[in-house]
Length: 459
Image (cartoon, rainbow, N blue to C red):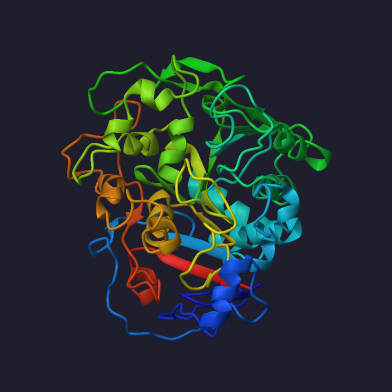
C-alpha cells in the first residue's frame, strides 16, 4: 500500500503536514458507467492528490475547536486504510459471501492499520504499542482474555435463523477473520483467549465456522443463544429512567481487553458507529431487543442537542468502554441504515476517494470519539447514504452523544456521567470535524497540538 492524503505516512513515521484529499481523474461518463455496472475502477483511476484545495468549511455539523483530549499510542489518531481491490462483489446475490472479498488484501489492511496506529514499522510492534498505551506501560500477557464486540445486528433479528442469508448489514466476515488472524499471528494471542460476541443477535453458522477453524481453532462465539448475564455486573445509568435492569455478559466481565468492531453505516436515528455498538453488550429480560427493554432508544431519537446519552455511560464504564484497547469501523461495504438492504446500487459511494465504488475501507483508532467523529463526517457528507436516510440528511443533532462524551466533565445536558463504579467519568477522547469535505483534514493534520489526526493509506 502507498500512503498519501491527510498527514499520510510515507514509509515509517514520515508526515506531510497540511496535505489534502481530493479526487483526480475519473470523468463523468466513466463515473456513470461505474455506478451502473458496479465495477471497480482500474488501477490508477482512484488516486489521491496531495495539496491544499483552500475550500471553505462546508459541513452540516457546526464547526468548533477540538473538545476533549486525544488518547492512544498516537493521541487522537485515526487510521484509514483504503483498497478498492479488497472488494470484488459484482452487486448480485448476497453481499457478505466471503468470495466477494480478497482475504489477503483485507488482512493486509488490518495489519497495516495496526502498525500505523501504533506508530511502528511492523504489525507486531504496533500491537505492542497499543497494549502499552492502553495499560500505561505494560504489554499484552499470555492468558489475558480479549472480547471482540462486533455489530451483528442484521443477522438473526427475528427467530432462530443462523444461516446469515439476509441482505441486511452486519460485520464483514472476512474482516472479522482478518482481525482474529492479526491477533493470533501478530499479537501472539491464543485463539482460546478470544471471544467474539453480540449478545442480542445470532451469529451466522458460516461465519463461526470460518473464524474457528485452522489456526483460529479455539476462538469462541457468544450470541443471544449462549450469552450469560453476570448478576454482579448491572449497568448503572447516570440518568434515572424506567426500564429493565441490564447486566453485562460474563464474556465481557471476564475479559481483560475489549475490541470494538463496529459498522460504518446510517441508522433510523441517524448514525450507528462504535458508540452504539455496545447496545449489543448487555442482557435483560428481552433477549432480542435489550436496549428497548432498558428504555434507551428514546434518548437517541430525541432530535436535539443537550440530551443525556446512554452511549456515554457505556463508553465511560470501567468494565466496558474503559477496557477497550482498539476501535474499528468496517467500511468495506456500507449500508444507509440498519434496516436497509445492501444492494449493488445503494452502496456505491460518490465522494472522493470512492468515486462511484464501494468504500472498501477500514478505520482504526484507540480514541472512541475521534473514530466516530470521522465516521460521522463521512456519513453525513455521502449522498448515497443521505438520499436514503432522512434521519441523517441535514441533521447535525445526530452528534449529540459526541458532544456529551467529549465534554463529559461538564456536558451540555448537565448530566453527571459515572464510570459504572460510582466515580465521575473523566476524559473519553477528542471530538471535532474536518476542515472541509475535499481536504478531510483535522487539527493535528494542520499542525495543531490537540485534536484528531487522520492518516489515510490508499492503494
